[in-house]
Image: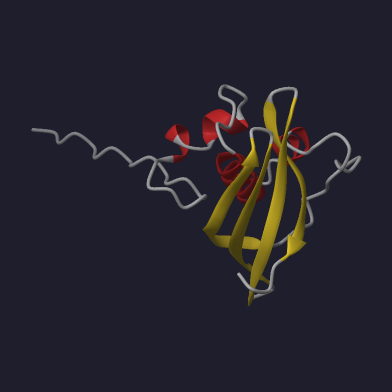
Length: 136
């Protein structure tokens, strides 16, 4: 009797949630679902960096601060994990997210501590900018 192959588990979402990618950030990256909060958008942007999804990174950037282009092709960063420390909603259209992202470049480990600002633009959360946050 042949045994059925064991199904391969769905990959975990890189953003650090306990959900599979297809139930977490992928619908946001694909444009099937809007990010319900600034934190969800930030997590989707981290996932986009892991997946080198330049299209989503640019699409989720505020029009007044978005760079003309973003080239991740030569970026050899290997993203290792995300920790969200704080999500503050200032009002219905403004929020900040403080986080630490761990990564390696050339075999050396780094940590990015940032406080990112988000605004709603045309009803959708978008990334405005971020500042290094050594206190994270």
